[in-house]
Amino acid sequence: MRGNLVGAVAAACAVWAALAVGCFGTGAETCDNGTDDNGDGLVDCADPLCAAAPACPGDAGNPCTAQAGCVRESWFKDRPLDQCLAGQCTSPGEGLAVKLEVDTSAHSGMPYKVNSMSTRFISRKGLDGSAVGCALLGSLATETLATDGGATQLDATGKLNYLAYEVTRVDNGTPGLTLTNPFIYTAAGADFVIWHELWTVPPDSNSGQPQGLRKGWGCFEAGDAVAPLLPEQDCSPDAGTGTSCRTIRIKMPRPN
Image (cartoon, rainbow, N blue to C red; front, top):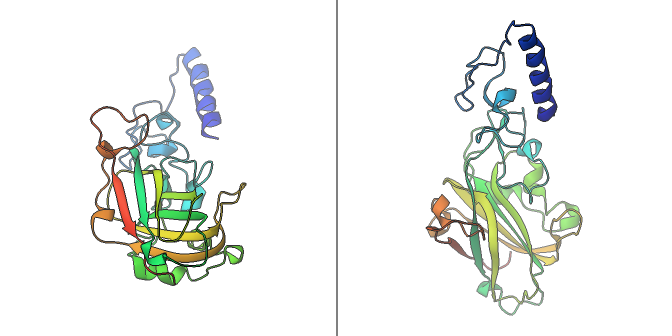
């Protein structure tokens, strides 16, 4: 949609230029200051002149009432995820990949296999400005069966902004092992909590969501696991020289 708008504006400007009249609203627009700098009635990322600006990738600038309205392809393909802030889709800035190691020793000996795990890095500030922490998330995610909405119940609230959302297939999920996700794509920054779930069935091939029964969840809001994420900690294969891969380690509590 923005591409069509850019083309329309460019075509209109070409006509005006041909008439030697000039084109209103084609002056400089600073794309991240909340101001209509060039007087065309369009602020920041809503202005087509900001279409290629680093602050305005994807749907950034579009109005929103929940983060789902800012997702372009899917929760799992957008890297990083745009957030819904003050009613507008907003780019979180620079992205990176981190490694996740999940200690499931508290589940050792349990009579099930872990076949997928879901991980959310969740902003500590809700869409309404209220604080988000483990107590709130636990109260919002009480359903344990995927078919009853358990896999997406946090998303369905529309109250949260995610820095990252990943679902990982687990091929050797014997309870008690350390499970690994080598690449969780997120945004650089701080002020997030980690919400992690273990599931008994591999992810759905179409939606990418976990299936089966949730066999435990863990929430982490203090300590090294939620230390600020820095661009130089990028684990992705195309990370430049001078980076050191960040490994986040969490230990799951006993199943609930």
